[in-house]
Length: 192
Ligand code: B4P
Image 1 (cartoon, rainbow, N blue to C red):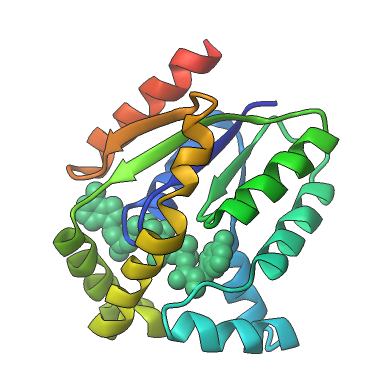
Image 2 (image 1 turned 120 degrees about the vertical axis):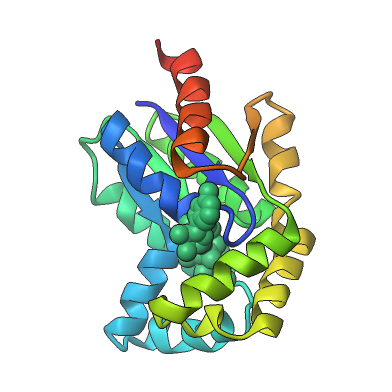
């Protein structure tokens, strides 16, 4: 199994590039943002609780997202690898993921960290908000709060994986194809 974390601030292109990467490398896509939005759409108790936090630009509690990922890993025993998108977002989530993968006899192969300037992030998310209907994309103060959450709680997750030399930084500005080529090169250098 070869497992990838696509890492970066909100709006850095994680969801966008994930779609291309899962098709090329035949990976199972696990996006905690998508899993949470599915819960919201189904009006589950978990979804209703998560919506309040997401609408304020805050992270959902670790135990909630770790539980969702644990179930998703169990539900997909036969895959060639997982692409984690938007997870882990805290050091506690990273430690939990390491343990879950170890139980399955596997580990993270590479962490691809997309780098995009703050002004570009805000521009992209406001732009997506025009068509996505996502309430967390329409208010600039919520978007800036998501970026602050990233700086305070998520950016340090890269240090967790730097200790084991797994992080590759990728310029996340440019065309979708240019960025996809850079990401693919890093993956190919590990698997070919
Ligand atoms: P996510 O669903 O993970 O959303 P995101 O970070 O906003 O989006 P992403 O980074 O994937 O978007 P993309 O750049 O592809 O999280 C939403 C919320 O869920 C969080 O705020 C949090 O509350 C909660 N949550 C999720 N996971 C959690 C966790 N593990 N722990 C706790 N809470 C969690 O797309 C952005 C836009 O940019 C698109 O319109 C796209 O078309 C555009 N774009 C992409 N690449 C571009 C490029 N190269 N040039 C121009 N535009 C580009």
